[in-house]
Image (tube, rainbow, N blue to C red; front, side):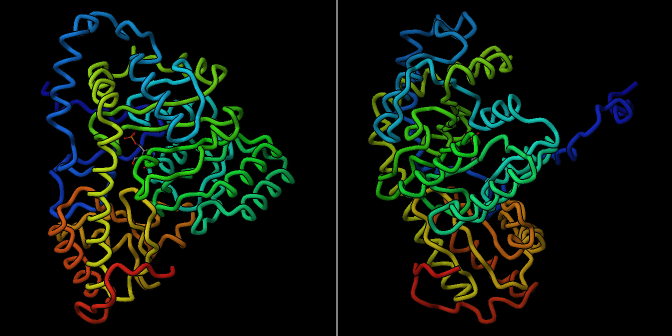
Length: 416
Ligand SMILES: Cc1ncc(COP(=O)(O)O)c(C=O)c1O
């Protein structure tokens, strides 16, 4: 029997997702995913870090978990203790941190200890598509809370909490990306955080805080994390090295109390996340993280300006957006008649990949004419060409933008 003739279909466990398509390479104009800027991967310093750490400690690869135990390579956790204190105001110990295989594994682990089908969670109305697909697959009810230019709206959150309480529903958590929100790029201010924390505590709802973009802020300044404000009580914090160093390394982390981490560790039966990545990162970050991140964000800022200028040139007033405060995404609103799910298909056929708004929103109608563009990976010239191709396709499919190269003041942020 050849392998191809055997039919696995009747044997599959129920509730499988749609099968994956075979990878056929990156599109020419790649505005999707959370890819990083290739020019800012610190290759030479990573080589030096790998050499020095392997020479010194390479023999420890002989044991699962090195000599650090199941929470992950201790020098990396110790680096994070200092970084989280200095940057996010978090006071924690190395043993409050679990290294994961990317923060996506962190999301899965947190979901696995807390969620069952039929549970309810609160989530930002515009949010990370990877979180939405996970929650949908778990059969969880998502209550989307609208945002403004500072993130979660307090009045809307309070209304949602009240409504759920009246119906006898206690949400399992509030998932938020407060520091450089995905997709909007907003940073929640300290007063807003205090009000949201107060509400969450009053209603007994934990906050699940995803901070994977919080290193990428144009002016480097940020308010304390929820985890810091609550002194760890009722907050689970996840972060990542994907956006600050490189996503292919697959290194993220969870910060939580032992009550939570002990449950998560009992589920994380993978014998530890990749050790070499953790060793190289610890070696690199201890010496160079502080100087690497500002150089990376300066480069990202240049690309954002290129993208905003290209949109202004090609789409004129048809493309509306608020200038993000950091990160790698621009969240764009096109005229109402544009259906970005259809646009994304037509664009992909021409080599332009974009994330359609309905996949990044709990409210599909709200997301219909919105789209997310990741500007970190393509070179500036590719950004300009890709936006020009996209404008042509959008005009052909939906009649907007009406005119070619409708130039207006470049880089201006406009109201949504
Ligand atoms: C909000 C958010 N959380 C988590 C992730 C997953 O990141 P990683 O698993 O690479 O750490 C992403 C990736 O884009 C993201 O946007």
